[in-house]
Structure formats: C-alpha cells, structure tokens
Length: 496
Image (cartoon, rainbow, N blue to C red; front, side, top):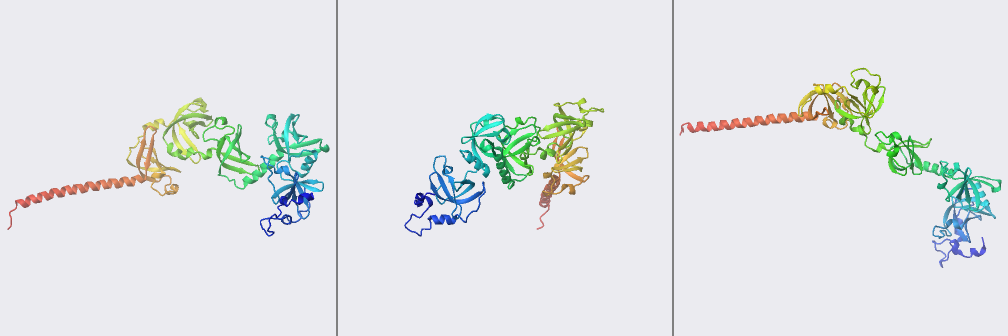
C-alpha cells in the first residue's frame, strides 16, 4: 500500500482525539490485532470474515492476519445512489478469488462478479464464484452472454430451471451465471444460470425443512396449471396441488378454479424431502360436507341429484359438491334384471332416490329408487309422541333408531342425554331397546328426528301436569266442604 495513504489515519480508523486513552477509537495496530492470526493458505472461493484497514484509490484493503493483506474493488461497496458504504474498521465477509501482483484479491459479491476481462472470468471459474452477464442475443443452441466485454455462451438448458427457449424473457437482462467451462484460453466459455438457481433452491429447501410440517396452512402463488394439478410457488420452491385436492366437488377444468399468478391458502398434506415433493390441498381448509351428511341425509329420506357416472355395478348421483351417492344396479327400480345401468339411466339425468345407508367415515351413501312404495305406505309418528325402538346403527353424528312402524329415525348426539365424548357404540350396541320422543317430522323427505333426553323431560312434564291437576281438584273439594260446614253450623241451635 502506498506510504502516503497511510499517513491519513482517518482512513484506517486511527485515533485523532487528543486523548490517547479514548476507548471508542481504534488505531491501526488494534485493527490488525482484531483481524486475528494469519489465515493460512486460501483456496479460491473460500469465505472468510475480516476487517477493512484502509481505502486507496479504487481499492479497499483488508487484513488477512499477520502481515498478509488483500484487496476488494471499491465499486462493490457503491449503492444505488452512488455512495460508498465502507470505512476502516468495518467487519465484512468476503470470498477469495486469486492472487494479483502479490496481493490476494477478494470479493463480497457472492451473486455475480462484474468481471470485465478474461483474467477475471478465469479467476471466477477457478474460485467457483458466479459472474454477472448480460444476455445480448439468441444464437444456435442458446444465448450469447456478455460478461463485461467478453462474449460467452449459455445453452438453452442452462438459462433457467426449465430450460426455456422463450428468448424475449431473457434478452437485454443481466443475471448472475456460473462458469461451467473455460477452455481454449477463453475462446470457449460456457455459462449456466440454472446451476445457481438449483443451488439457491437447495438452500431454500434446507431452510424450509427446518420449520415446515404436515398440517400447516401456508400461502403460495399458482405458477402453472397442468392436467393433473397445479404447481405453486412456496417461498421459492415448487409445491403441487393435485386435481383431487382442489375442491370437495368434482373439478372438470382447473382453469375454472385457479389462474396463474393467483395467491392461494393451502394446507400441507405430505412432505417427501428425499424426492423434493411438497403436496398441498385447497379442499383441506374448506368445510368437509361429509361431517353433517348423516344429519342432512337420514335413512329413508328422499333426495335428488344428477347422475355423474355409470359403472357396471351402479350409478353415482351427485347430491351436492363433494357428496356422491351410489344407486346399486339392483336398486334402479326396473323390476327386472339388467346387465348395465345405461339400459335405464344416463349421465346428467336428474333422479330421485331414497337413502338406505350413510357412512360418513368412509364417505359413502347408498341410495335406492325402489324404496318409494314402501316409504309411501309407512306410517310416520307425530311430534311429541313417545315411542319404542331399537338401535339400528351408531354413527359419529348420532344414532339410528328402528321404530315399530319400520320407519328409521335419527337421534343427534345433542339429543342423546349423555356426556360429551361418550362412546355410544359401547353404551348402545345395535339391538338395544330405547324409548324416544319425536321432536321433528318431515313427511316430504320422510325424515324423523328423535330425542332420548327429551323422554325424561316429557315424563316429568306429564307427572307435573297430573300433580297440578290433582292439587286443583283437592282445593276445589276442600272449598266445597268448607262452605257446607258453615251452613250446617248456622242452622244448629246455639248451645248457650
């Protein structure tokens, strides 16, 4: 370093205060001491932490321990407003590039050296550090990229993660590139932007692995739409929303639900870090229609919907988005044996059917078109009537009761009169006799809602009514006797 520059101690954080014991100021010797011991032999690309000891001309000098010095181009510290943000004493991180004129050259630009000559590109190649290049034109097999004034080549396959051939996206833009090949004394320089993107993606994957978990709800942006699902950008990495996880209902075209660039809130349902796969779900954060299916579609109730699919064993009927019921081939109401449902029904046909069984856990509803006559002849009970029945089936949302008139009623869990969380399967196995009161009757839908807890309330009310009637009768009788006694007393002679 030039001796004349070392006379300006302000460049190196020297003590300019009259008080030599000022602890807030650091002199030249102190900076060297803080820089630590000699770092030893540096390898190209090696990252170190050091301190700035001085600025001279276009160079920033740093201490590498002992009497060893290195330098960094001053322009690396220039911000957008043209201000140099560096001073003696600053602690910085830098990457070793090469040895030039006996001094070690380093850089702080981990994302692209602004090299302007072949020597700089060669140094970056040896140090495995990126260079900054501008895409000038499209040529056979890829793009011509200028790193400073040096012409380099980037194949189509190395311009991004997908190997795009859409030149207009890249032309005229500057990106960091990795030097893949440097041969023939710089006459054949091959660059790759993809290699850097893959490195960044891996760093992001490692960062996300630390905090992402199955079940978390995250925000992502739709990147592309395919026939099998939608790829979304999740903090720089790709996640997939499979077609089956877009909505509870049937989705014919993803474009009707999602669009590129749309921001969506999704739930993580699977993580496979070995294969770098993140599976997401849109429908998982929506209300599951099967939760209330048992109450909404009680056994023997009349439902209607559109046939959405035919199979050799029956016809699937869509009752609402996310809920399909199956009419078995034997329950299509033909009165004869058929080989395939298409003989009597077709897709998009509107039909009415009766619920035979509801299984919310396995997401199944069995329907029948033959139950109509039986249902019309069934005698429905009346609201307030106390009846006897037996447990037909226990479901998560309540209990099905078979009544004496062969009609099946439903007791919601809230009407069971048991503590929350009670195991109804164990307490009321199928066949258990039970007394219930009718609290709702929908003749049109053939729906009967029952209450077990309401029976005790009903009996108590009836006993209270009978008791009050008895009390009134006794009071009336007493008053009548009292009036008769007074009349007799008045007629009898006075003993005195």
